[in-house]
Length: 237
Image (cartoon, rainbow, N blue to C red):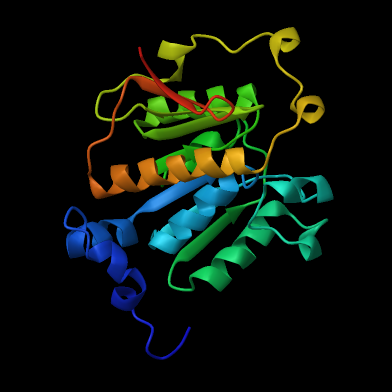
């Protein structure tokens, strides 16, 4: 960071937007957001929330970086292979924006720690890659009255929604129970093209920022993004 670097010069292009302004930027800088997962979806979320100046950016992930992650988990480097993803992500954030606070949680989110991890954050962005974690995050956020930015990907398709916000519905209102083990697709076998989590993760970051700023967002709605046919479908529930 140079001596001339200030929050205004760094965030001026956001502040110039009429709907954001100085007041909106202050809300961003005072916010605490937890990103669950520092992988395919978490990478663009972390990147854009850090760049926007989120005051405290928390990241929870127990995994270590592997070479096959690098086609889509863009905040990590080849040199980070074998490192904890939250450590690699923290390095990226520090280099991108030294003005924000970073909180890393290199643990597996489970019933024993989820409430304490989520409690102090304003918004949770769920970029997890399994149904057990998604439903756990949902249930804890509902109990704590925390809004969730939800995203998922498979093949050429992604989904995004805002749950439990301003009286809006939650994950279980859309999908009451997680699928059975035999119905869960094998992502390792089917793979993913790296740009897809980039698209969905960027949408998730945008929704998180809109919630923090206080801009209007759609609730009780799931957006499905089909990048093969290039269709965007909204489903109300």
